[in-house]
Length: 133
Picture 1 (cartoon, rainbow, N blue to C red):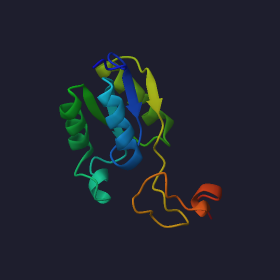
Picture 2: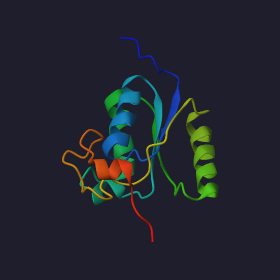
Picture 3: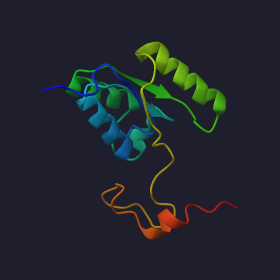
Picture 4: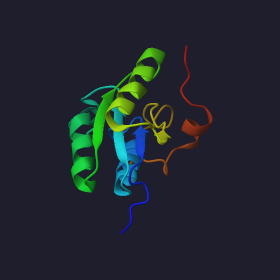
């Protein structure tokens, strides 16, 4: 079977769990090297979806026999965002694909769906979003 993304490099933000992890896993299944981003090393364990970001990267690498790396950064800080891209490109090569999935959990107004995916989002979370004081 030909893997259509062999030789490509992707950065998937928010990839430690949920939708981001599923996207990273799918890109890896197509032969793509993947940078697995999160804000905290233990982020996946905080939501019961794994232990660490490093473990997530390792599992995806082993499952699909591709290169992965874990990268930590707060993407609301422009300096950290630039450093993240530079680190990924130094380790894996120039980015071909960016999936900007980071942004928090689906549950601002409507509560966390079960399963926690993009299919069962309540209208309040899509149309309004979180309110800031």
